[in-house]
Length: 428
Image (cartoon, rainbow, N blue to C red; front, side, top):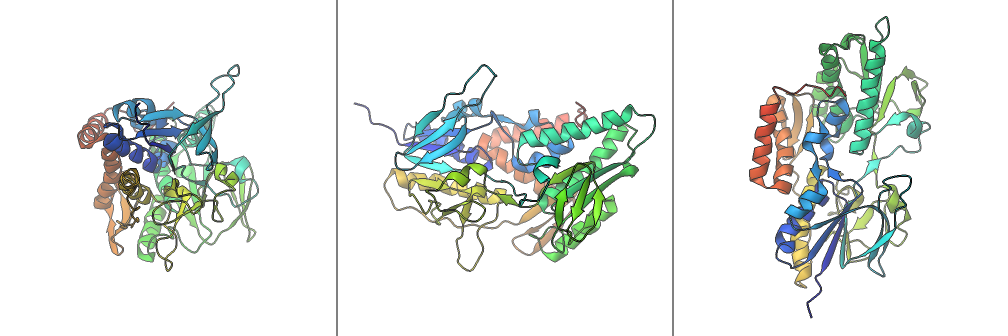
């Protein structure tokens, strides 16, 4: 009678989840040491830090996406398309709802049994209950949302093209963290490219991009010197920065502030704060923090069940009582994914679980196609083309982690060769 393989189920195919599934598949799945299953509600993977470029239309997602089914076959794990509904830790089962492919098709809810469950479901924007945000703002939590923003922006330009006179365009971006800053800078290039390609009824000089932040400066996660330099560069681009402006409500055409100010906004993006996905709100058997992230030990095992791990944005991992929990950053998820490969090896051999330690490599923020700013190793500031090269290398490292260095190199060469011939912006 054949031995039943230990079943490791990973829910969430983001940066961390896909890197973990790939590495576990190569290490254990290929040698039949364990069965690895990845569950995600999408068919394809896109590196989340690219979403602002997809939203601005400067990146074609079809060229950058990874198909889960094809990737799973190549790297010795199974992929299951579906949305997580619940976790039954007593029966070691998760409940999954497959996608509804048509009106006639009724999805069949299914249960999947696990020996070890790893939750990597990421995060979503936190609207803090602000009036009108859910109804009138765009978000950049997913590829679908980025596509919707790109299409809505493109349609504004097409509609303007059919009008007899030029018009102005006001874009409001709420939240001046990395996402908000990168989107604002990318949109400057987008407005120029629309005009360059013949959509001239909205002159770039008539586009007003306003970056809104409730605190006293932009990029609060970076040091004041780097934030001040970034603000100076953004202002040079023509971006208006409103700090110490707390949004009170949003409607279809305006953003209202608690101090009584009002600005007009034709299209508004909300990028202020994050929280765990809504599904975790129902996990009453698990200890969670105020934004519903699962509380985990340094082993990344949840407080409530040693058979359930969580990492990345959906986990509250505090390694030192004197320091805050780890921030929702791609490098945290990537390092935790690598750690969990060894943690699963220890689990399979019934050895003590290792403890995760985080090595902060710094932070980088893109300001345009050739510019970036950042901090390395805590206090080393980098700017300009060098910083941009390092910023791009983060994506190349992610590609290497999921495809291997040879294919990642080939993808880099492909991008360099096609950059000269493809349009600078998506026009469909």
